[in-house]
Length: 282
Image 1 (cartoon, helix red, strand yellow):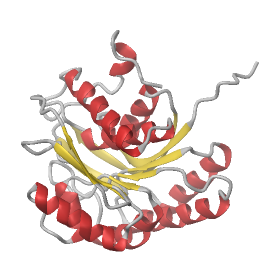
Image 2 (cartoon, rainbow, N blue to C red; image 1 turned 45 degrees about the vertical axis):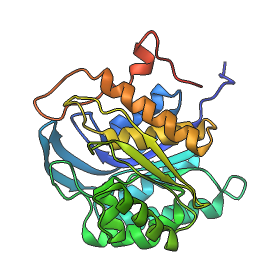
Image 3 (cartoon, rainbow, N blue to C red; image 1 turned 180 degrees about the horizontal axis):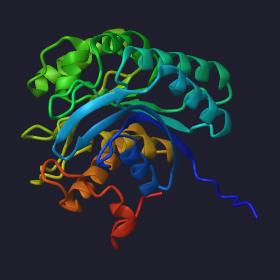
């Protein structure tokens, strides 16, 4: 007998992290913690652990395209999260896919698409080449609805210095001149004062203070936040509520981290399912 209560489907497009702290496998855990069924298209294989990224092997762009087309024909997503792309070829294929998806989904053209612009790893490895970054700027930003860069990524995308909250606000305004449709969050989880800054398409700014949690288990915080944000949007949250809930979820994942590895360890992304007092707000 078929279950009439089908969960919504979310698609993650990202790299594979064998240490299970970030990328595809982390995104799928976040979706599961929110009661969402996750599908995935891998952009690159990596050799990494909590100690950093040692090697990146991009996938063939043709295989990537076939994966997207085959998946979405059978399991159309209610939202898409985009993480590491790796190369210009993958970025170009993704831009073409989003164009086809928009043209084909006239009945539901406005699904949330959240881009977490993974450009450099925390250990300094390049995860998107310069030509790929240019395609992101010119071909991907017009096709997404949300962007979640940290200060360094925001600076690379806009070409503006971002070393303070006022500079982050200015960079968001510069970005809005060419992409006014975007909800953009300048995340500051890696700063001394973790206050995120949201700019909406209407031009409003919202400061969202966070709690700094002293832990070495911070691998994949950007992936977790953007995937949690997408989950909340799929579940019907309004923009500001979705951001607030995503921040709260990541703080919980940090507080319940399992303390694994000898470097930047993984968080506990399934904490709402495993903690007696923590249940997804569905």
